[in-house]
Image (cartoon, rainbow, N blue to C red):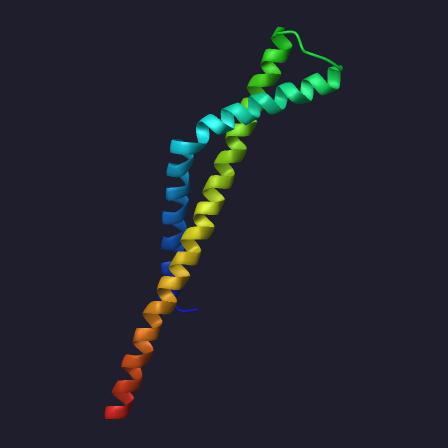
Length: 111
């Protein structure tokens, strides 16, 4: 793999990760908060066999669930963004190399 191609892939990965972070900040924080807290409360209600009382321990566990939910959605957004950016960089590199191959063939034909 040439240095230009490696650089293109790295730039595409970084741009995709940045866009994934931006999408997470705009669209992912609230669902992460909601699903983290809802999932924690559902898990606690299943473990205790009924509705849970709003005690300090339950609130602390819910906060941990919220942080975990936000972290998981953030990680998925960043990874999917970087995969998308890398694939777009690969497509751009392939399309760019098609033009270079034609130019090189024309130069060889004229010589």
